[in-house]
Length: 119
Image (cartoon, rainbow, N blue to C red; front, top):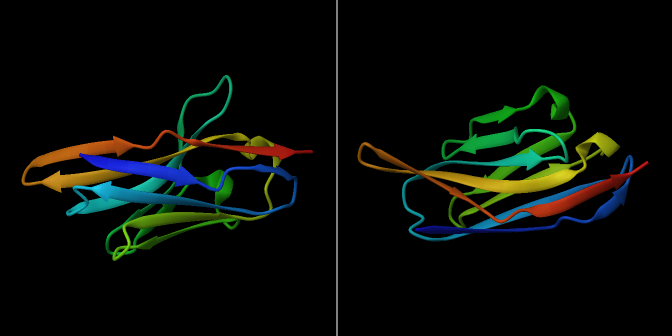
């Protein structure tokens, strides 16, 4: 099992910045992809940003140029630097980790952290 704990969510004004962090513990070997997803009221959960253990990143179009995902493989953490926040970024942000064990892929989720952006 892998446990993921997010932190950093807060209430911030539009145009502000926040930094989310996610720490993984437990069976953290072979975690190949870590990333962030978000769930806003009335919407489906959507990808925000992901990063592989090799450093390749992927971003939702809506956050490109504003958000930056980074990862510390030694510490098993993934961070999301969010700049120029908009009210539409308001959501619960979830950390996700994917671990491969042979041909089996395991997916883990954190409990989420609330980000609220006021206009």
